Image (cartoon, rainbow, N blue to C red; front, side):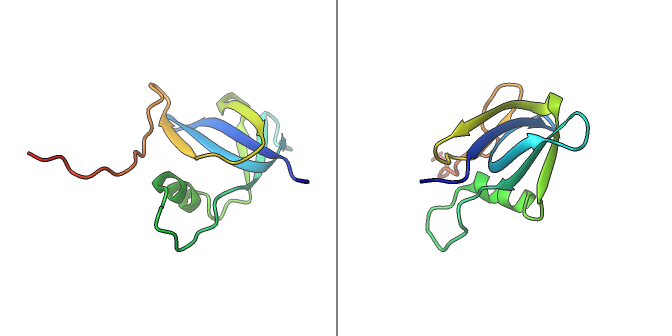
Length: 107
């Protein structure tokens, strides 16, 4: 049985909508902020399939112990059963900002 809860946290930052997974979400000691800690990423391995969004987020938050997000920036917090794909979307239209690389089109 799983002893740690898993949360999907969706928040706005610099015109983008981030979706991260964390094992700790609480009211922050800083008034008006939500505390998000123990971020969850897939283990970095030698696999052939690499998710560019996950790699970008892993690099951006590599030294982060706890995020203190302004309550106004938090869009949604869901308690989930399992981790899904991470995402960074354009906040205006919801389109993914980091698309999967496609082969170049023929001319």
